[in-house]
Length: 159
Image 1 (tube, helix red, strand yellow):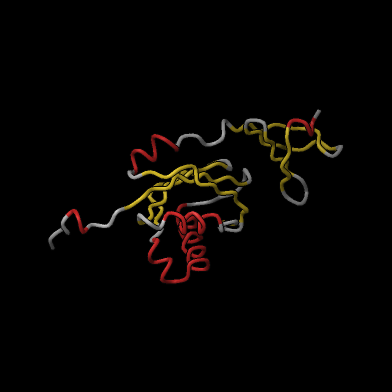
Image 2 (cartoon, rainbow, N blue to C red):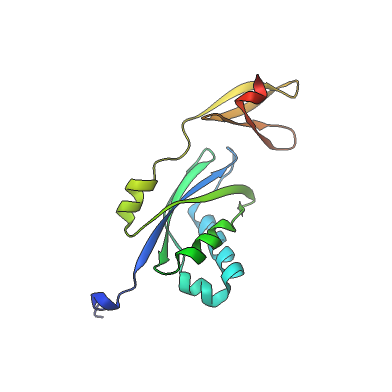
């Protein structure tokens, strides 16, 4: 089968996406892709979702921080950003997702926007709510494990 001439080939944009969740969350590429499709289908409908054609191109997630490259058709960047913003849970774990930037090539997207996941994660014991608890520290943010789940905190909460 012959390739299409260059002027007939589809044009793509690549969105660098930052993903943040609790430290014990287990999120994989397939679950992220599935949630993107559901969000696009629910927000844009079937025709709009097909026009945007969201695909996860690269994915990394560990210790509550991750990043991904999402491929989108040129001209559909704004609807795709809206669909990505609708994702609030992946595999039962609450997530915060933000688009860091948009680029015309995967290489430029990776070089400009990826590799900026939150700093090193350290686990330590802290005094929180008059009890000794486990916490994970990322930069100046703490995720403290309580009996009900996790609580987000800052360094000011411990002083």
